[in-house]
Length: 504
Image (cartoon, rainbow, N blue to C red; front, side):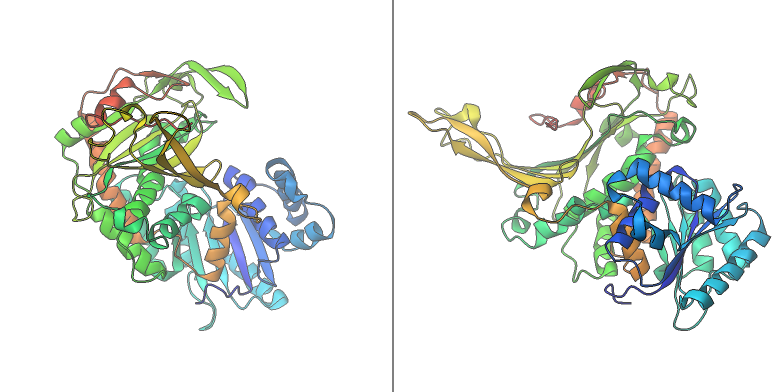
């Protein structure tokens, strides 16, 4: 299907009273409606167990948008028109009768609103509910296309599996009821403008692509830093950890875009083919590799600056829902190695953590130093290797560091930045990632969604690390105070002469 076509459809939300729906999904849908980007006729069906009706749930959605996206102003005719498309169906996720009532409601909406039998099922529930929902959709026949011309799709939120075995099981259950082209595995990082821009920077600018290889790049750093702790998600996070929560999906997705070969086209499968090849070229981790090429940490009590205010925060083990003796990592630094012709010998370092000093996600591509001949005696002090930094959040954009002569007598060199930011470079606003991804799912464009083999390839890389940590001696936790850049051992992960370039 063309990505320019937006057909009438019904969007069914499982987990419709949850935090993700309130914070992200509903504000994104309302924003798309205000921009006139949703189909001309559509319906949103909330499937949940709480005792509500259409009117009550519509007010809940309005309250959520007021709280989490107040600039959208859910008032007046625009809101009234949007709200009339929201319906609520009360049922538990394990009640087969509820799915048959859902089928009847969708048939009614098809007739009343001329939706053409097009359905998008969105699983915004905890992952332990995925298999149950998929099974019931199949039993109720909701996985089948209603007519030869209609479409049925399913969006599955992360985390997609807990390890390689569970990811394979989830893929198998999905493929037993849906075709691969019906399955949209969502990772909101891929909807961010700066992530999408990685491909454009690389392949639309001839000054960069010829240099993206072992001959010119010294190393790559991918940093995913958060100032927050577990934010009430202690029960979930303590079973997951930062590696499952951030590295297996977000960080590895970004790594593949930086390191992949040029695709033959921008078609979804062409791009995803190259991403899978990149994942499969990552050197597998033995237990010895894990001991030498990974560092894990857990934050203790400390001080964090949020919105300009310094505040004391508890250690991870004191957070609600966390085991007081937990060995779950809230910080991980990993040295990945790509065993292919382009990148052989170039380290890819990934650092991800909670309760770090700054909320930032960025890619730092450091070029090799110039030969130490011209400036060694006169101006070596300010001579630094070039660096391309792609900032994913906040302040989306990129800058390129080059060396320049400082005005004045003598030869003094200083690093300067060639900088661009989305907020100032373009006259259009940067929208939330969920807006782009929801619209793409409705249009049937899977370019920014993970394919099944891609998810499994990522787990093939990460699962041996997680398994090795279960057998290796755990560091003494906590091993870094909240508000610092992680355990000191992370510095030892880098090669001689390399340092973590802390985001400013």
